[in-house]
Image: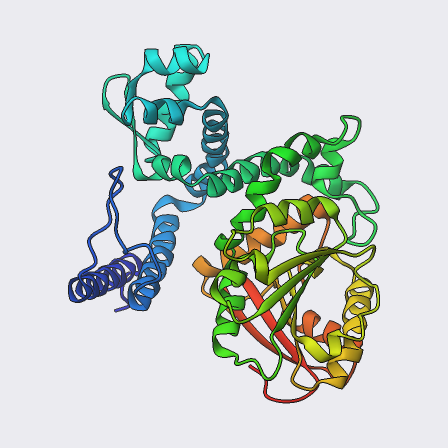
Length: 424
């Protein structure tokens, strides 16, 4: 007799949790808790076994939840989460969490209402919704306190800025995506993004938030999985008579700032066509790294390289630049680097960017991160995230002799390109 799928999933979940427990016991990692002030390596990547098992368990739980809910409840819960997001965004804007923290981690509704300026009956409803999601606690009636989740939003201002920005832009843009797709033209080349559709007749909404989030967004590069790939590449690569790294672009954060802290034997130069981003980038460099990193304004990223680059550059880094460029512009930028690459076979171009995977490349609980980015790119920018085949075709169009090696991990990919030598 065929085994019931619910029983099978439950058994797999138990098996995976047992594996986590055994690994945790063997490594001495403390169990997870959402109590404020708690610390544990459970959620870090310090144990590859636990990380893999956690992701597997979450995937199994997602499948089990959908089966237990059924289509109607699944869709109801899926759509209703929008209200959770709206409540969190409003609370973050009101500084309510800061008020809890200033009161020792817990405060009465009356106190929070007075300090935030939000009427008690309105504030109560938002806090109780967030309590259902584990973002705050209500240990006593109308007394609210922090959890490890809300504590993170207070202690990590860079991550908080990312959360706020995501909550803002997705709620503004998503509501207009349907209208943008109904209107013609609606293709990637000539269509309109949901965000732009929402701005029509109302000015540039994003400009209101640009200055508020620009520095925080630049510093959240440490959260980018693409940076881990870049750092890993440098850890595995030994410079051969060259020690200069040139980063091109950097509009979404500079990898060189963090790399300069780790690779003191290398020198870094950031070349960008935005004085504003260069200025903010320079302000983020610590005193111990200032001597090893420079920032250069270039009128155009397509400007020809200097003759000195062929003699000094070890690698060109292009991080999160090409995702919203046309193939023609992306190929044009890469071709400006070809002369130096051909003169020096050991030189590399390191590209990190988003990729849209094939349907069976990852299990659903991993694949969803890519699919969310697919929709984000379409909604916010009317941009199609390239597949692996499309990336390889783009690189081949630059020069048939160009060799590319891909490494993909959630949710970024890294491409190592050269005209000779060993590939990743």
